[in-house]
Amino acid sequence: MKKTLTAAILMAAFVTSASAQTLVTVNGEKIDSSAIDTQVQLIAQQSQGKVTDSQQLRAGLLNRMVTQTLVNQEAKKLKLEQSVAYKDALEKSRASAKQQGADKQANFKQQFAAYERDLLSDIYMYHVVSQNPVGEADVQKFYDEYKARYKGTDEVKLSEIFVSSEADAKAVVSDLKKGQNFADVAKAKSVDASAKQSGGVNPRYMPLKDLQESAPLVYGAVSKLKKGQYSQAVNAQNVWAVFKVDDKRAVDVPEFAKMKPAILNQLSNERINNAIGQLYQNADIKQ
Image (cartoon, rainbow, N blue to C red; front, side, top):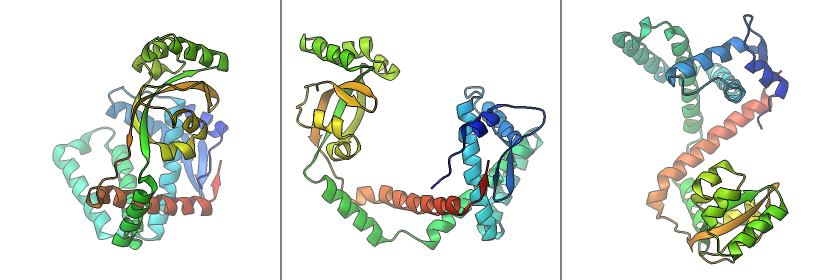
């Protein structure tokens, strides 16, 4: 399991200064505030100012750098930086940058160093999957379980109105009973900014099986409703809500061949995440 960085460390990452501060050490390797500063500057340049400096951005970058440091350390233990794949990719990228004149840019050194770290991380992830490949039997097992799970079940598309109190939720239900349009009520009364704009419409379908496990109160409120009906007030995750069933249909389980690439990707990612999780468990991370 990943260790969570404390609020104090994340706040320190947000404070830039002339002298770099050590934010975290990962197995003795320091991650300084200057490294975060460099990443923020590169992102701002690459996004042409669309992504701006913020505590949230810096917190994400710091967590990413901790993970990348762990992965790079393990890759070097495995001598993956000496692999033909790594060396070839690095050489081709360096030659391409030189041909395009990118190596003359002021920030090229920092950008290429970041690329080297990313490349070594990619090589490590490829190594993890190649050492524990996803077999045809693994994919078939996943598909069979998936198909059995959703066979004969429904999925729903819901519109949502979120409010801050039970009284407000009951007032929403009262408005709907009077014949007011759900979208209009959502725009007028929902505390959720996106719902105010969209009229509460959520375009994504949610299998009732998943809803039953992840949000049983919501499942209980909507599972018996028909298309076009709305729920009573529901206390859902510290807010009150009213839901409308925009559509309800049987879950469509695609044929194996169509799902195979996505299953391969998911199972490969699970192997990678498990490996990185093990690195975190064994790591000495000091804040």
